[in-house]
Length: 330
Ligand SMILES: O=C(O)CCC(=O)C(=O)O
Ligand SMILES: [Fe+2]
Image 1 (cartoon, protein in one colour):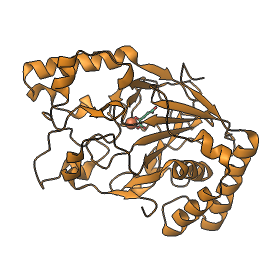
Image 2: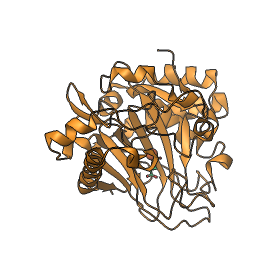
Image 3: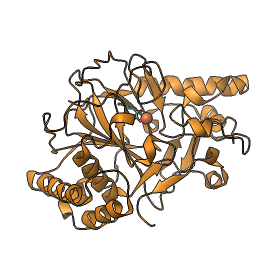
């Protein structure tokens, strides 16, 4: 069930075609872990997918800044137990990693990070013991505050994909679009000024130790050709260092995002696609089960070549020494 999110539906033939393509690649490569061979096979296979699949994966085209793709199936028995953490997930649900990579490749260029989840292109998002209150995907009992994915980095995704494997308690992802927010011109003017840095989040231990330069100050809002975009991660932004007027504007933006926030509870097989320049996402708190039946999402990040949704000055940021790795040659 998804509350109010635009839905796009893959027909059965297309879903089967995707599944067969993924099975073939998995048989040939034996794993969904990144390798040049796997990525080459994904690129080739994505190029052969039918027109209807391409149509359903057209760019996000409403102010909601997201859509839910339905029609794919997940066999709850075949995927096995929910892994106890990303580090031990290995090839669990590998077929679905490859399906997600194929979809990501139709929409753009999948991204991986050397410093996150062993450089995999598809991440496992599961609650992990000891991380309950972290501000990362591994948390559970706290609200994961609304954020732009990898906001600290100039190479962050344009699109974020969350594919649902299991979600027995219907735990919602939250999503709030900057295009639904009401702010006055003075607040917008303040928030388009580069006054505050966004520091690397707790999923990036190495980047947090970076000593190769000062954290760059970045604007929170940006006037792109087709409207406002945002780069927002309050849990990793030292908002208290800004002058009072700026702080107040930042708080009003946060309140507006909370006001327009929607809950999207994914069912197995559904894939949520979020425009990471328009929408901040998070997750409601929940009680982890830790018995192999926990909520389990697969996450992929996508760069869309030639998108003009960000200030050009981002190109000069050091990115805290983290390198985003693109799956396919540009
Ligand atoms: O668990 C969720 O619904 C979202 C978690 C999250 O922020 C992410 O995976 O990037
Ligand atoms: Fe996230």
